[in-house]
Amino acid sequence: MSADSLRLPAPAKLNLMLRIVGRRPDGYHLLQTVFQFIEHCDWIILRRRDDGRIGLKTPLPGVPEPSDLTVRAAGLLKATVGNERLGVDIEVEKILPMGGGLGGGSSDAATTLLGLNALWGLGLSIDDLAALGLQLGADVPVFVRGHAAWAEGVGERLIPLPQLPEPWYVVVIPACQVATGAVFGAPDLTRDNKTITMQDFLAGQQENHCLPVVKQMYPTVSDALQAIGEYSDAAKLTGTGACVFAAFDEEGAAREARRRLASHWQVFVAKGLNQSPVHRLLGLV
Picture (cartoon, rainbow, N blue to C red):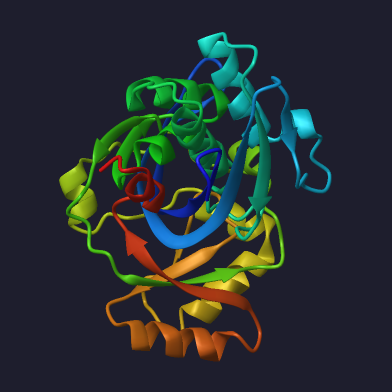
């Protein structure tokens, strides 16, 4: 696009495992998880303005414009640098489902931060942007940093995992939106699981501790896991769901599973990525 506009991807993520290992006094849960990106994206279009206005051209149904994470990200970045003339028109080409566990809103916010840092010529570091992102949500920093990662804390303490395989994923989108707050607030959720090491994960300890509660609360997620389980013995839930996924070494096998599942499910195939595509486009790698 022109020097005054950018069109950038906001990739989905998968949680390859999710452990709940404690709870802070403020109610936030302490986690261990592994993030990997996939080649399935929203797209964020940013058009620079010099009149200080931040506008959203594509509001989401039921989400007031001031609450949209892209608008909040732009406003936070503008307030941080203290330049009242900075403005932007934001357009979101929404592909990723809401309430799906793919991190769409967090990724949109991160791409907005990264894109406006370039479009407004601010020169902030990735560390600066990740710190701002954490104010918007616990998953935003991993998208800002742009690499597959082992995460702890509330998800903000990140260690890169560039050695992860990058398989083909089949992702099923059940016809429901999971309320993350309801899952984390469920009485039956186990919150004191043992911590593991990164090597334990790489050796195969890849549970999602939210899964039993999500299956109980959302039977269609359980049905989706059973359906994809006919093609893989390692089907998983990403985050708190609703999306479920399985990894395939060969693209052909993944596309054949998608073809068979598509008669009853909304489903797509995407390549695993250890580096965010927005970082490649902005020259941050």
